[in-house]
Amino acid sequence: MAEIGGDINRARQVLESGGLVAIPTETVYGLAGNALNGEVVSKIFEAKNRPSFDPLIVHVSSIEQARAFVEEIPSQAEALATKHWPGPLTILLKRKSIIPDLVTSGLDTVAIRVPAHELTQNLLSLLDFPLAAPSANPFGYVSPTTAEHVNQQLGDQLDYILDGGPCIVGIESTIVSFESATPRVLRLGGLSIEAIETVIGRVEINLHSSSKPDAPGMLKSHYAPNTQILLVEDFHLELIGDTSRIGALVFNEYIEGLDLENQFVLSKSGDMNEAARRLFTGLRALDQREDIDTIVTALVPNQGLGRAINDRIKRATAK
Ligand code: AMP
Ligand code: MG
Image: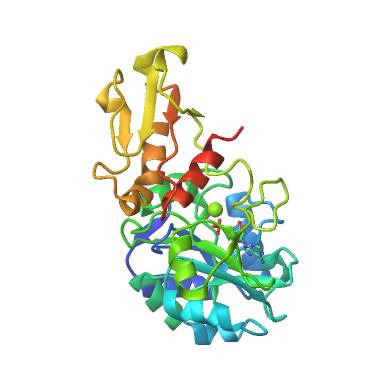
Protein backbone atom coordinates (compact mmCIF):
# COMPACT_ATOMS: atom_id res chain seq x y z
CA MET A 1 0.00 0.00 0.00
CA ALA A 2 1.17 3.50 -0.78
CA GLU A 3 1.36 6.56 1.43
CA ILE A 4 -1.85 8.58 0.90
CA GLY A 5 -2.43 12.25 1.71
CA GLY A 6 -3.25 15.70 0.47
CA ASP A 7 0.29 17.07 0.57
CA ILE A 8 1.32 18.59 -2.76
CA ASN A 9 4.83 19.31 -1.50
CA ARG A 10 5.33 15.62 -0.79
CA ALA A 11 3.95 14.81 -4.27
CA ARG A 12 6.31 17.34 -5.81
CA GLN A 13 9.31 15.91 -3.98
CA VAL A 14 8.51 12.37 -5.17
CA LEU A 15 7.98 13.50 -8.78
CA GLU A 16 11.15 15.60 -8.82
CA SER A 17 13.15 12.60 -7.71
CA GLY A 18 11.74 10.42 -10.50
CA GLY A 19 8.99 8.66 -8.55
CA LEU A 20 5.36 7.90 -9.41
CA VAL A 21 2.39 9.66 -7.82
CA ALA A 22 -1.32 9.02 -8.31
CA ILE A 23 -3.03 12.35 -8.97
CA PRO A 24 -6.68 13.35 -8.67
CA THR A 25 -8.38 14.87 -11.69
CA GLU A 26 -12.01 15.58 -12.49
CA THR A 27 -12.12 12.56 -14.85
CA VAL A 28 -10.34 9.62 -13.15
CA TYR A 29 -7.18 9.27 -11.02
CA GLY A 30 -3.96 9.38 -13.05
CA LEU A 31 -0.69 7.50 -12.51
CA ALA A 32 1.73 10.36 -12.97
CA GLY A 33 5.42 10.83 -13.59
CA ASN A 34 7.78 13.29 -15.27
CA ALA A 35 6.73 13.23 -18.94
CA LEU A 36 10.15 14.44 -20.11
CA ASN A 37 12.08 11.60 -18.48
CA GLY A 38 12.05 8.39 -20.53
CA GLU A 39 13.03 6.20 -17.58
CA VAL A 40 10.16 7.50 -15.48
CA VAL A 41 7.77 7.03 -18.40
CA SER A 42 8.83 3.41 -18.80
CA LYS A 43 8.11 2.86 -15.08
CA ILE A 44 4.56 4.13 -15.70
CA PHE A 45 4.01 1.49 -18.41
CA GLU A 46 5.45 -1.22 -16.16
CA ALA A 47 3.37 -0.27 -13.13
CA LYS A 48 0.15 -0.58 -15.14
CA ASN A 49 1.30 -3.47 -17.25
CA ARG A 50 0.32 -1.27 -20.17
CA PRO A 51 1.43 -2.21 -23.69
CA SER A 52 3.92 0.25 -25.12
CA PHE A 53 1.69 0.91 -28.16
CA ASP A 54 -0.83 2.68 -25.91
CA PRO A 55 0.32 6.33 -25.69
CA LEU A 56 -0.02 8.49 -22.59
CA ILE A 57 -1.75 11.82 -22.02
CA VAL A 58 0.54 14.70 -21.02
CA HIS A 59 -0.94 16.96 -18.34
CA VAL A 60 0.01 20.63 -18.27
CA SER A 61 -1.11 23.59 -16.17
CA SER A 62 -2.27 25.86 -18.99
CA ILE A 63 -2.51 26.36 -22.73
CA GLU A 64 0.64 28.49 -22.45
CA GLN A 65 2.56 25.57 -20.97
CA ALA A 66 1.21 23.31 -23.73
CA ARG A 67 2.87 25.50 -26.37
CA ALA A 68 6.31 24.40 -25.16
CA PHE A 69 5.60 20.81 -26.22
CA VAL A 70 3.79 21.15 -29.54
CA GLU A 71 4.65 22.55 -32.96
CA GLU A 72 1.43 24.49 -33.33
CA ILE A 73 -2.11 24.73 -32.05
CA PRO A 74 -4.60 24.94 -34.95
CA SER A 75 -7.25 27.62 -34.49
CA GLN A 76 -10.12 25.19 -33.83
CA ALA A 77 -8.04 23.36 -31.23
CA GLU A 78 -7.18 26.66 -29.61
CA ALA A 79 -10.84 27.73 -29.55
CA LEU A 80 -11.88 24.45 -27.94
CA ALA A 81 -9.07 24.46 -25.40
CA THR A 82 -9.68 28.09 -24.51
CA LYS A 83 -13.30 27.27 -23.76
CA HIS A 84 -12.89 23.86 -22.09
CA TRP A 85 -9.51 23.85 -20.33
CA PRO A 86 -9.18 23.08 -17.52
CA GLY A 87 -11.60 20.25 -18.27
CA PRO A 88 -12.21 16.72 -19.58
CA LEU A 89 -10.81 17.47 -23.05
CA THR A 90 -7.63 15.97 -24.54
CA ILE A 91 -6.31 17.31 -27.83
CA LEU A 92 -3.84 15.63 -30.16
CA LEU A 93 -1.20 18.00 -31.53
CA LYS A 94 2.07 17.65 -33.46
CA ARG A 95 4.71 17.14 -30.82
CA LYS A 96 8.09 18.75 -30.36
CA SER A 97 11.03 16.37 -29.97
CA ILE A 98 11.36 17.21 -26.24
CA ILE A 99 8.47 14.74 -25.69
CA PRO A 100 10.03 11.24 -25.49
CA ASP A 101 8.96 8.68 -28.13
CA LEU A 102 7.73 6.35 -25.43
CA VAL A 103 5.08 8.88 -24.30
CA THR A 104 3.45 8.93 -27.74
CA SER A 105 4.26 5.32 -28.67
CA GLY A 106 6.32 6.76 -31.51
CA LEU A 107 3.41 8.77 -32.99
CA ASP A 108 4.18 12.29 -34.16
CA THR A 109 1.26 13.71 -32.19
CA VAL A 110 1.06 14.10 -28.44
CA ALA A 111 -2.14 14.00 -26.37
CA ILE A 112 -2.37 17.06 -24.11
CA ARG A 113 -4.79 18.12 -21.42
CA VAL A 114 -5.20 20.64 -18.59
CA PRO A 115 -7.00 18.81 -15.78
CA ALA A 116 -9.60 20.59 -13.64
CA HIS A 117 -8.68 19.71 -10.08
CA GLU A 118 -7.34 22.27 -7.66
CA LEU A 119 -4.70 20.04 -6.02
CA THR A 120 -3.33 18.82 -9.33
CA GLN A 121 -3.41 22.33 -10.79
CA ASN A 122 -1.36 23.56 -7.85
CA LEU A 123 1.02 20.64 -8.17
CA LEU A 124 1.53 21.23 -11.90
CA SER A 125 2.28 24.88 -11.34
CA LEU A 126 5.03 23.95 -8.83
CA LEU A 127 6.74 21.56 -11.28
CA ASP A 128 9.01 22.55 -14.13
CA PHE A 129 7.96 19.54 -16.23
CA PRO A 130 4.58 18.22 -17.42
CA LEU A 131 3.07 14.97 -16.07
CA ALA A 132 2.49 11.92 -18.23
CA ALA A 133 -0.45 10.14 -16.67
CA PRO A 134 -2.63 7.28 -17.85
CA SER A 135 -5.49 6.16 -15.65
CA ALA A 136 -4.21 4.66 -12.39
CA ASN A 137 -5.55 1.13 -12.85
CA PRO A 138 -4.04 -2.11 -14.11
CA PHE A 139 -4.32 -2.13 -17.93
CA GLY A 140 -7.76 -3.18 -19.13
CA TYR A 141 -9.54 -2.93 -15.76
CA VAL A 142 -12.12 -0.39 -14.58
CA SER A 143 -10.65 3.11 -14.07
CA PRO A 144 -10.26 4.48 -10.51
CA THR A 145 -12.39 7.37 -9.29
CA THR A 146 -11.21 7.45 -5.65
CA ALA A 147 -7.80 7.30 -3.93
CA GLU A 148 -8.96 4.07 -2.31
CA HIS A 149 -9.54 2.42 -5.72
CA VAL A 150 -5.98 3.33 -6.68
CA ASN A 151 -4.52 2.00 -3.47
CA GLN A 152 -6.36 -1.32 -3.73
CA GLN A 153 -4.84 -2.11 -7.09
CA LEU A 154 -1.66 -0.15 -7.62
CA GLY A 155 -0.69 0.80 -4.08
CA ASP A 156 2.46 -1.28 -4.24
CA GLN A 157 3.66 0.36 -7.45
CA LEU A 158 3.33 3.96 -6.30
CA ASP A 159 5.38 6.23 -4.09
CA TYR A 160 2.51 8.50 -3.11
CA ILE A 161 -1.24 8.89 -3.70
CA LEU A 162 -2.45 12.48 -3.69
CA ASP A 163 -5.98 12.21 -2.34
CA GLY A 164 -8.29 14.79 -3.87
CA GLY A 165 -11.58 13.06 -3.05
CA PRO A 166 -13.92 11.34 -5.52
CA CYS A 167 -13.64 12.42 -9.17
CA ILE A 168 -16.52 14.69 -10.10
CA VAL A 169 -16.82 13.77 -13.79
CA GLY A 170 -15.89 10.12 -13.27
CA ILE A 171 -15.27 9.12 -16.87
CA GLU A 172 -12.13 9.69 -18.97
CA SER A 173 -11.52 12.75 -21.13
CA THR A 174 -12.85 13.18 -24.66
CA ILE A 175 -10.00 12.93 -27.19
CA VAL A 176 -10.10 15.14 -30.28
CA SER A 177 -7.69 15.07 -33.24
CA PHE A 178 -7.18 18.06 -35.53
CA GLU A 179 -5.20 16.35 -38.26
CA SER A 180 -7.92 16.46 -40.90
CA ALA A 181 -10.06 19.40 -42.04
CA THR A 182 -12.98 18.22 -39.90
CA PRO A 183 -11.89 17.52 -36.30
CA ARG A 184 -12.28 13.89 -35.25
CA VAL A 185 -13.31 12.55 -31.86
CA LEU A 186 -11.25 9.42 -31.18
CA ARG A 187 -12.58 8.69 -27.71
CA LEU A 188 -15.93 9.68 -26.23
CA GLY A 189 -15.55 11.06 -22.73
CA GLY A 190 -16.43 13.64 -20.11
CA LEU A 191 -16.92 16.49 -22.58
CA SER A 192 -20.03 15.80 -24.67
CA ILE A 193 -20.12 15.98 -28.47
CA GLU A 194 -22.86 18.59 -28.12
CA ALA A 195 -20.56 20.81 -26.02
CA ILE A 196 -17.73 20.44 -28.55
CA GLU A 197 -19.90 21.20 -31.57
CA THR A 198 -21.23 24.34 -29.91
CA VAL A 199 -17.69 25.73 -30.02
CA ILE A 200 -16.19 24.40 -33.28
CA GLY A 201 -19.08 23.12 -35.38
CA ARG A 202 -19.47 19.62 -36.72
CA VAL A 203 -16.99 16.92 -35.75
CA GLU A 204 -16.57 13.35 -36.96
CA ILE A 205 -16.75 10.53 -34.49
CA ASN A 206 -14.20 7.89 -35.31
CA LEU A 207 -13.90 5.27 -32.61
CA HIS A 208 -11.73 2.44 -33.80
CA SER A 209 -12.09 -0.90 -32.16
CA SER A 210 -9.03 -2.95 -32.78
CA SER A 211 -6.11 -4.54 -31.04
CA LYS A 212 -3.67 -1.86 -32.18
CA PRO A 213 -5.66 1.31 -32.12
CA ASP A 214 -4.78 4.91 -32.95
CA ALA A 215 -6.26 5.87 -29.66
CA PRO A 216 -6.20 3.12 -27.10
CA GLY A 217 -8.87 3.30 -24.52
CA MET A 218 -10.15 2.33 -27.96
CA LEU A 219 -9.36 -1.31 -27.42
CA LYS A 220 -12.43 -3.35 -28.07
CA SER A 221 -12.33 -4.93 -24.63
CA HIS A 222 -11.37 -2.46 -21.91
CA TYR A 223 -12.70 -1.06 -18.67
CA ALA A 224 -13.72 -4.61 -17.75
CA PRO A 225 -14.53 -6.06 -14.33
CA ASN A 226 -13.35 -9.58 -13.44
CA THR A 227 -16.86 -10.92 -12.87
CA GLN A 228 -18.68 -12.03 -16.02
CA ILE A 229 -20.69 -9.07 -17.35
CA LEU A 230 -23.45 -9.22 -19.95
CA LEU A 231 -25.04 -6.50 -22.03
CA VAL A 232 -28.75 -7.27 -22.30
CA GLU A 233 -31.68 -5.59 -23.99
CA ASP A 234 -34.43 -7.08 -21.86
CA PHE A 235 -33.77 -8.42 -18.45
CA HIS A 236 -34.92 -12.06 -18.83
CA LEU A 237 -32.98 -13.02 -15.77
CA GLU A 238 -34.33 -16.55 -15.46
CA LEU A 239 -32.47 -17.39 -18.68
CA ILE A 240 -29.18 -16.36 -17.17
CA GLY A 241 -29.20 -18.47 -14.04
CA ASP A 242 -29.77 -18.33 -10.29
CA THR A 243 -31.22 -14.82 -9.89
CA SER A 244 -29.94 -14.55 -6.32
CA ARG A 245 -26.41 -14.49 -7.77
CA ILE A 246 -27.06 -11.88 -10.47
CA GLY A 247 -26.10 -8.24 -10.00
CA ALA A 248 -27.32 -5.38 -12.17
CA LEU A 249 -25.91 -2.02 -13.15
CA VAL A 250 -28.92 -0.01 -14.25
CA PHE A 251 -29.57 3.55 -15.34
CA ASN A 252 -32.48 4.99 -13.37
CA GLU A 253 -34.87 2.17 -12.49
CA TYR A 254 -34.58 -1.04 -10.55
CA ILE A 255 -35.25 -4.31 -12.41
CA GLU A 256 -38.15 -6.36 -11.14
CA GLY A 257 -37.42 -9.77 -9.75
CA LEU A 258 -33.93 -8.96 -8.53
CA ASP A 259 -32.89 -8.25 -4.96
CA LEU A 260 -32.49 -4.48 -4.54
CA GLU A 261 -29.20 -5.07 -2.75
CA ASN A 262 -27.82 -6.62 -5.93
CA GLN A 263 -28.64 -3.57 -8.03
CA PHE A 264 -26.60 -0.45 -8.55
CA VAL A 265 -28.65 2.45 -9.92
CA LEU A 266 -26.51 5.02 -11.72
CA SER A 267 -28.88 7.94 -11.21
CA LYS A 268 -32.34 7.65 -9.67
CA SER A 269 -33.31 10.98 -11.23
CA GLY A 270 -31.94 10.01 -14.65
CA ASP A 271 -29.20 12.65 -14.52
CA MET A 272 -26.56 11.68 -17.08
CA ASN A 273 -23.72 13.52 -15.33
CA GLU A 274 -24.47 11.72 -12.07
CA ALA A 275 -24.62 8.43 -13.99
CA ALA A 276 -21.17 9.05 -15.52
CA ARG A 277 -19.74 9.99 -12.13
CA ARG A 278 -21.01 6.74 -10.57
CA LEU A 279 -20.34 4.32 -13.46
CA PHE A 280 -16.92 2.98 -12.45
CA THR A 281 -17.80 2.97 -8.75
CA GLY A 282 -20.84 0.84 -9.57
CA LEU A 283 -18.87 -1.59 -11.69
CA ARG A 284 -16.29 -1.99 -8.94
CA ALA A 285 -18.87 -2.42 -6.19
CA LEU A 286 -20.62 -5.23 -8.07
CA ASP A 287 -17.32 -6.79 -9.12
CA GLN A 288 -16.24 -7.03 -5.47
CA ARG A 289 -19.36 -8.85 -4.32
CA GLU A 290 -18.46 -12.48 -3.64
CA ASP A 291 -22.11 -13.51 -3.81
CA ILE A 292 -22.53 -12.24 -7.38
CA ASP A 293 -21.43 -14.41 -10.34
CA THR A 294 -22.86 -12.42 -13.23
CA ILE A 295 -23.45 -8.71 -13.73
CA VAL A 296 -26.08 -7.62 -16.21
CA THR A 297 -26.29 -4.13 -17.65
CA ALA A 298 -27.97 -2.21 -20.45
CA LEU A 299 -27.23 0.89 -22.49
CA VAL A 300 -28.44 4.30 -21.30
CA PRO A 301 -30.07 7.00 -23.48
CA ASN A 302 -27.49 7.97 -26.11
CA GLN A 303 -27.22 11.71 -25.49
CA GLY A 304 -24.81 14.02 -23.68
CA LEU A 305 -22.46 11.93 -21.54
CA GLY A 306 -24.74 8.96 -22.24
CA ARG A 307 -22.68 8.30 -25.38
CA ALA A 308 -19.47 8.01 -23.38
CA ILE A 309 -21.21 5.84 -20.77
CA ASN A 310 -22.47 3.54 -23.54
CA ASP A 311 -18.99 3.38 -25.05
CA ARG A 312 -17.58 2.18 -21.70
CA ILE A 313 -20.43 -0.27 -21.18
CA LYS A 314 -19.85 -1.79 -24.63
CA ARG A 315 -16.14 -2.19 -24.03
CA ALA A 316 -16.63 -3.54 -20.50
CA THR A 317 -18.99 -6.18 -21.88
CA ALA A 318 -16.99 -7.03 -25.02
CA LYS A 319 -15.37 -10.47 -25.01
P1 AMP B 1 -5.70 6.77 -20.48
O1 AMP B 1 -4.77 7.80 -19.99
O2 AMP B 1 -5.57 5.44 -19.83
O3 AMP B 1 -7.10 7.30 -20.50
O4 AMP B 1 -5.30 6.55 -22.00
C1 AMP B 1 -4.85 7.60 -22.78
C2 AMP B 1 -5.39 7.44 -24.15
O5 AMP B 1 -5.08 8.59 -24.92
C3 AMP B 1 -4.75 6.34 -24.92
O6 AMP B 1 -5.34 5.12 -24.61
C4 AMP B 1 -5.03 6.77 -26.34
O7 AMP B 1 -6.37 6.42 -26.64
C5 AMP B 1 -5.01 8.24 -26.30
N1 AMP B 1 -3.83 8.84 -26.90
C6 AMP B 1 -2.78 9.33 -26.27
N2 AMP B 1 -1.88 9.82 -27.15
C7 AMP B 1 -2.37 9.63 -28.38
C8 AMP B 1 -1.92 9.92 -29.69
N3 AMP B 1 -0.76 10.54 -29.92
N4 AMP B 1 -2.70 9.56 -30.72
C9 AMP B 1 -3.87 8.95 -30.49
N5 AMP B 1 -4.36 8.68 -29.27
C10 AMP B 1 -3.63 8.99 -28.22
MG1 MG C 1 -7.07 3.97 -19.10
